[in-house]
Image (cartoon, rainbow, N blue to C red):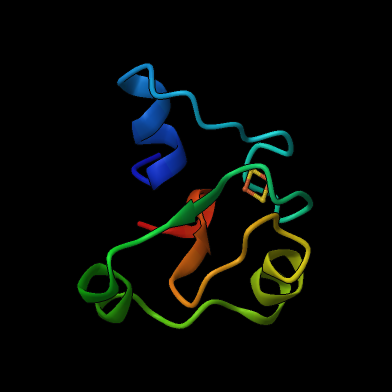
Length: 68
Ligand code: FES
């Protein structure tokens, strides 16, 4: 895939993705630059729910596996 999680793994970046992109964990939590965040489509409801459980949630947090 071309989501942030896949790209991170391609470049050996240490980002976890315990559920492999099925929006069932928050281990792929990433914090984005505001201008990057603003360019993305809104997170879906499932992603919002998982983000609420993410450690250190910020206003520009997303699940890496859902960001393309
Ligand atoms: Fe589990 Fe992204 S890898 S929600």
